[in-house]
Length: 370
Image 1: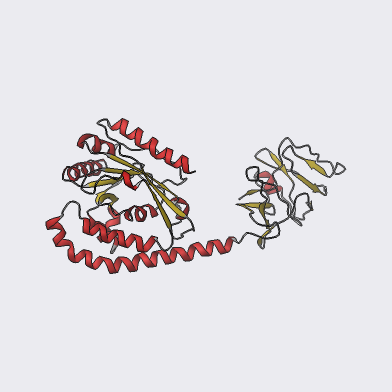
Image 2: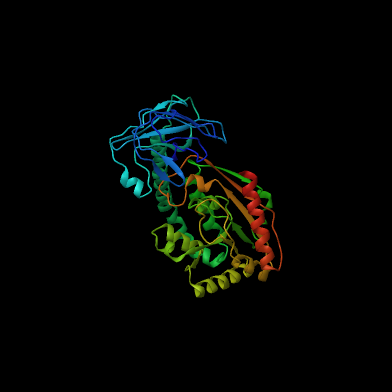
């Protein structure tokens, strides 16, 4: 939330009670006030008087030209409202804000606006509570389906595991078919996924290194719907989760202790051994999920494996997962769609060059869809 009472420091104003009631800013915002003998409060270069809001006001979005929703906040309640520009605002108050002025903080009774721009008529408020409730219900439904499907599908995976170890120890294709079914049952009813560039995949028997940006917990589900039998690298604590952690073990996921250099070295050696035996490995080169959606720096481990083994690197761009299930909000599932872009393979024997090229390709995919 940011303050709607956003008087530019270049605004012409006067602290005298006999001064004009009209304050005009270069940005075109106007507020009509009734002056009173109260001290000014300062905050980040702006000057404010404390007041009790009687009528809210708005300013228009410079980007979209749409009115922003305002919220009337008081000590007892807060409620969203809409109004037009240039309303009269009573700045009188009975509360002494000397302490706020000394702490260089704003009084609580101020007009603030939400981050959401109004998209309907100015008379209708945005149903924030309904959106939050809808996302919560979708999140509960998502995890309910996840758990139920995992319990049901774990049984055939466990029963066929001895045969998988005998006939397909390294790729484990039949396990990944079950994992694809599980992810599809979980995600498909709630999230629309669009795939671009599926023809860029190598043949199913060709080992490769797959790399992608990492935005959300939902990334794993999305990638499993591709049906490719690549080994994920997962932190060791995941394997302790009932059913899902056990399924990761049966799939042959590679454990990794974060911030442990010895574990990282063992992990890379295990990846190279699997690739040489015909398996594919999936890396998130950023190492963790992006909290702001921006592409972080890539670690070179995946590209070192590719350079030393001579297998291709398949860059994949994931778009939308961070908006649907943001970092730190894994209990919610916002409405939206996901786009998966599979880029053409890149090959090389220089890990630094492969790392830079793969990151540039994924970044370009994000920029083109932003």
